[in-house]
Amino acid sequence: MKLKQRVVLLAILLVIFIFTKVFLIDNLDPSAANREDQRAFHRMMAGLRVELDPRLDHTLQSPWEIAAQWVVPREVYPEETPELGAVMHAMTTKKIIKADVGYKGTQLKALLILEGGQKVVFKPKRYARDYVVEGEPYAGYDRHNAEVAAFHLDRILGFRRAPLVVGRFVNLFTEIKPVATEQLLGTFMTVGNNTCFYGKCYYCRETEPACADGDLMEGSVTLWLPDVWPLQKHRHPWGRTYREGKLARWEYDESYCDAVKKTSPYDSGPRLLDIIDTAIFDYLIGNADRHHYESFQDDEGASMLILLDNAKSFGNPALDERSILAPLYQCCIIRVSTWNRLNYLKNGVLKSALKTAMSHDPISPVLSDPHLDALDQRLLSILATVKQCTDQFGPDVVLVEDRMTLSHL
Image 1: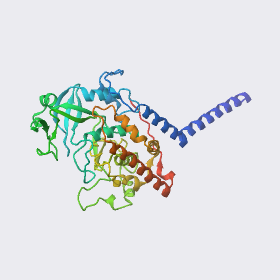
Image 2: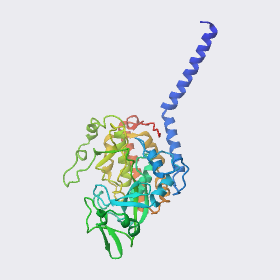
Image 3: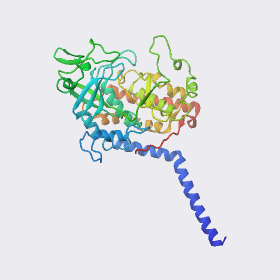
Image 4: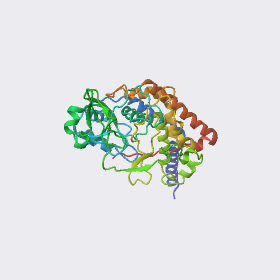
């Protein structure tokens, strides 16, 4: 080989080496990942307030088609959603063309079909904002406003695993009764001057109806996930027994996480880290009722843990149920991206962000101030728990890098 050719070849190899080195550093250097987390946080904060605006700039003019296209195995909606306000506007204003009893479950709800064929789940108001639910952390009726708040917290934490929720007022006499099925209509009654219904569910009783203010009822509507994404139900490994005097194994066995790690789908893939993300989410909102969870069907552990049914939350701002955090303090691992996001939200940022995110909602104010204050206090407890783990095992063991590329087709 001639000298000139050798020089050219060496130059090409040098360029390839430099490019490869730069590429690897950028992708493996923790500081690069941290910078991306910070940029993602700033993007979230910039788009925090969502105006409910009916205008659509998307080539698909149906808000329901747009929302359906967002869903992928690891997200319900993408990071940047300029059409979010239009979809939520449709959820709170589109005509109700059919109303039925809710799908099976323990709590009162109604299944509504909106104009365009979109299913939504309607949960009625049962408590005033300042009402404190006493007793066990899972006590009381579902809280419609908790569903709204939980959805926006999901956005703020960057999980994007909760279906869209927005508040809505419905007129039971003019909007629901004319399109209600016989099964739902049979549960309607009048109490004083108020129209009420008690629906059909495990705990639904004629003696405990949900009542409107006259005919106007406040509630939340949750967007039904597309039928092309069937759900699979799983028993939560840290679920409660709900039986007095009988503890679940995790409540007395401190090495329980070691056993979970040997069981599919927690022995590989992202599911265990999803469980820990969910424990953090549930602790912040005070939800001790996640005895089961859903993922997409036949996912072999690859899809996300979907944050459905968050209404048993924000019941008592003075109660911090530490047992909700058991997956975190027993496993002592957490995603780096989750850890970074939690740190960005301390010093009052979380309360302020959630208040801003919910300010557009038709049922605003969604939460009372004591519940917002409780979020900041609980965040400090989470950060302290992670610090205990890193002090014991070291950050290299506790902070786990798990970033999965998401594609929206």
